[in-house]
Length: 382
Image (tube, rainbow, N blue to C red; front, side):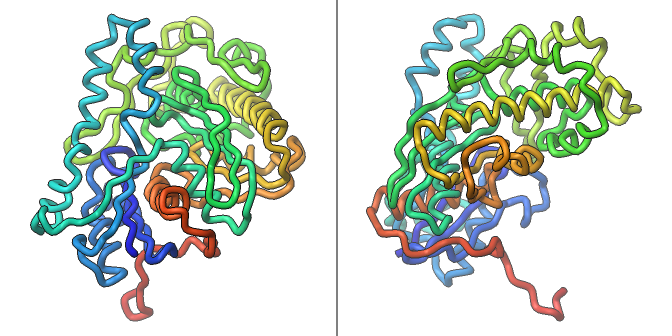
């Protein structure tokens, strides 16, 4: 049986393929078309997956997509109704997802085949469940706490889950506009790192700073009763622009996250490629500090709900290796399995594995022992 997993029309578009439940191949489209964080349709990645198993798209039994435009619809409507002036941008954001509605036509067109030859069943999986699936189902464990956090996906920024055998039970969601990923991105933008995916640079900048602004940044984010909340006065509200914009070449462009309130408190934002000042380093320090405090607060709540020593984790924020390095000293967890493709390129893998285990009820037999899932190259070619 062949299961094709996809992340498409979303940053870090990718494809993965399972053969009888085992990961055969996985790759991000950017590795083939050389467009960083490509957010279009992963046609080259799909073809590479099929070539790896010697199959055609007509041989595929299931296609799983790591996003679901109808997930958390009530929460989306509730927010839109409360913010009617931003309704037009909400509709434009939703229109982007319409491209996924006719998957058969997309595949037939990109792979030059007859749509009538496609026999697969189609599955849509909520963003953060796909993230958790990419970690837990790749681990060697039969039970664990599951955690995913990033900027946003299907109107959720954070998810906690109980993972057991083939099932992932969602225990809690943190809905937008509250997002640790957005908190991090907003301050990164303010100090001049305004391109998609530059958060890792600012994580590296933070140790050069001092605790100068920790009290002020504490006003931007707060924790209470196992959750966190953003002070939205410091942020451009969701729907005030079209958010992440995908350009015609598939590159991703971020809209501004910070409000004028940031300038009132910290002065003018740094322009990209200008000198980095001590203020910028100190803001990076305070941002990393409160990111970690919020992260450990959430994990403390998760451990109370799922008192396991093992934690399976994914999502773009799970790439914060500084926070990860403190996890054992700050939480009761004693083992972690963090998906190497923790960003959205891992959604394809998680969606495929969820279909195999949770939808088709197939038992756990394999674990991911390495991340060498892409093309191989001979010594001569190298």
